[in-house]
Amino acid sequence: MRFGLNKCATVSVKRGKLERVESILLTDGQALANLGAEQRYKYLGVQQTYEIRQRENKEEVEKELIKRVRTILNTQLTAKNKITALNIWAIPAFTYTAGILTWSRTDLERLDRKIRTTLTQFGLLHPNSAIERLYIPRRDAGRGLISLEDGYLKEEEKLKTYFVNKNLPVHQWVAAQRYSTATPGLNNEQEPERENMVEKWKDNWRTKPLHGRFYSSLHQIDVDLPSTNIYLTQGYLYPQTEGTLMAIQDQVVPTRVYARHIMKIDTETTKCRLCNNAEESVQHLSSGCSSIAGTKYLSRHNNMGKVVHQLLCLKERLLQGFTPHHLYEPKSVLENDNVKVYWVLTVCTDPGVESNRPDMVVWEKRKKSATIIDFSVPLDQNLSKAYGEKITKYEALSRQMKSTYQLNNVKVKSLIISCNGLVHRKTVKHLLEMDLPHNTIAWMQKAVILGTVNIIRQVLFPH
Ligand SMILES: [Zn+2]
Image (cartoon, rainbow, N blue to C red; front, side):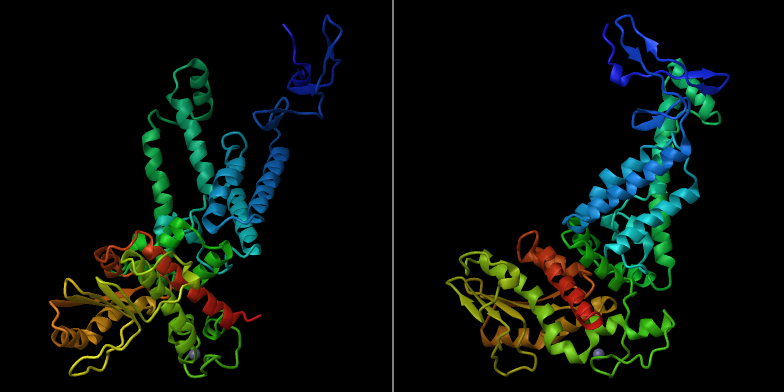
């Protein structure tokens, strides 16, 4: 037998106290060192001697955790990938110690807060944003970070289940020592407890007076939730952009209204710095300011439309190849034997109608039919209203087109994504009817939310 001496050490304990004794000499002359009172050895990643020194170990774990968090935040990863990296590389360095080191609830809360302030330092989290959303899964409009509190409790629970359900005497002994009140079969109750944590966060978010407003908007009857949360589930945004968008949704960006009413700063006026007409709320800047209606709002609206235009024209073989969306400029008319596509072009009818310039018209020559397509980026709370308005707006045009050009039918499709990215369920339906690629909605939404973030950044943080 050969000893791996560099991995061996002895401890000597007399009456519960560590003692320094001589190294043990082996027959071949090598020595087995004694750890003494000061040195420690690492077993499964935890420093220990006769006992596990809680304080030292906890300090080290905390240092390692924050080091890993900062390392990840310094990378160029996208929003979702950064959170994933935190969840699989930083948080486990901490939750690994569950059941070995003792962390109080206060410890866990303090460390969760420390991670949040680090996220804020790196621009990922606005300090006044809804904390709950950070820990809610991405498919439910959160950001999907594992909280230490939740992760630690879950890990402890797993450990307990393991020991309680094993039948070997050693497991039973540990279970009896540590979990004497535990009953077998706990593992079945584990899942619901975790679920409840998410439900608790959702509930907190829902009932908060300011943050809760976006929660309500999100749960309007016309909102298609899976499509609306695409920017989160795909997670392609820059982490800082995702942070800003959430701050806008949570209505905590420093508009003049926010400054006076929430931050209680004695501002001279709460009127909009651009139009000097309406109150400067985040809603006003996102979608209601007359000063930027013809410029910034229009280009946001057009960027969303261009996505549909290009993908539709590619499908109809009116275009040779794909152009990156931000570089794409639609032609006013594109035409082949089957189809003709208008981009913001007046449609002449006899008699003429008032609203005769929809964003797009698709003429299907063989079928003798046409589709009027119009885009809209309303405020979150006007999502349903905007749909009805657009349909009414082009009712006359569709009727006159049908008679003037002797068409079998003319449909109106109103495609709506609100300025904070809420997708109208009819938008999803219409895109399906038009047989456009699966990711069309994601590209449209990206155009809208980047538009909104840029507008708010340019107005509130001009550099
Ligand atoms: Zn204004």
